[in-house]
Length: 578
Image (spheres, rainbow, N blue to C red):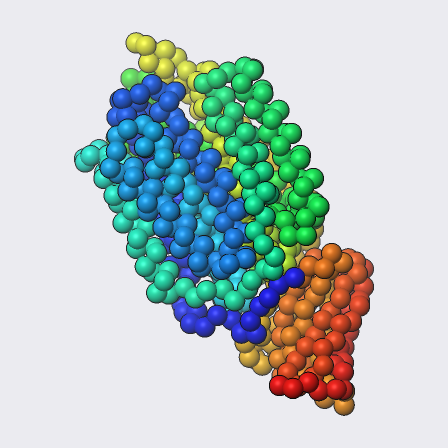
């Protein structure tokens, strides 16, 4: 169960959304910071190419591990507190990298930078807990899209710095952005009033971390080690064993790191699986277009652009994702996040399909970037709304952390597969491997196939209409009346009444599922009215309490259909001291 305050955190200003989105963009910058200098890393660090890739792999692995862990810590101890912690660790990592050219120290710094990936689900959780309902859709869409926005904007900026200055300046800039994000968060963002009960599941965190590292390591290094090598296959086998044992352990705990029963709900399961496919499609364009643009025209298909121009031509990918956030909010309000996810996937498919024939001029890369940015922006924006609508408020951080992890797994798989495809189809010219147009087109076909799988998964998501998210508070009589005027899907509604039949305002009504976990919470309006949605059919307990009245616990059953169940809650006549 969860402990909450009866009011939202105070001081939630209009600046909360841009500040949290800026924090998300800063975190995303860490992922693409070194893209412009990838090919030069072996020389810059005086090491072998296979060892230099650890500078990128370490960030990926630490981000995958930190994302679900920081989400759970945020649910337990405060999302704002954990957001600032994530950013602070990132700043330390950026400074470590800025001050060294040693491989091991660079890997250490990059590992600390990857730790900040947990900021994305924490920001989404803060938005749910502190913002009014009418602003929540577009805010979560912008936060979710910040991963792509940061990546897209970082490419030209990092390329400009790398081309005209010492590459260590990239890390000093990243540290400065991190400090600014921390300062703005401290000044503007209020702490969430929501807290999950229980303690941190340390064995679960260790088990999940070990399983993720064992799984992602052979994915990212398989091309170097050989996909059929004993090391690669052994690590995949070990990952399967560790993750199965971890899952069995989590199912036996009362307060697990990841509630696998919640994760198994169709709305959560198919959203997470679709997230992997969206992650795959996002990373393919980031890998292919910069290389195609920078290849010399003497190849017969390269577009001969500089590093900076190539970054500028790909930047609209991120900018378009940012501009789709308000569009998503309007579409989702009318049709629901499932429909916007499907629409986004269709636009991505059109973008990659068009890309197969638009690879002969720089302006065509711009068109592809805009199309794919619009589709990926809609798809990314839909994912947190689908998750938030399917899990209890106390699990928002952990659930969105897991969803962000699924996207990261998608980008990791994409990186490995596309890297292998481009290497296998490359031509060797003067001892240098040059990617071929065949490899680029095959990469786009793989992305299109991933989108097709994502579309099939999205079709299995329950419900296509917009659903009202359960609010943890009722700010005013007008807000409550507006909420009651909305269509209530699959939930309970009624009034909280005193013993004499008079309405009880601001009564705390909590929905508890059959496992004893909170599935929703709200406050009654001035006329005693309340509404609560349910995640699915089954037996529930509705607990109500109010100052000056005795508490009430009432059993109720919902069939799981989309009709609300009417249930008035009459508090006992005995009053209790205020």
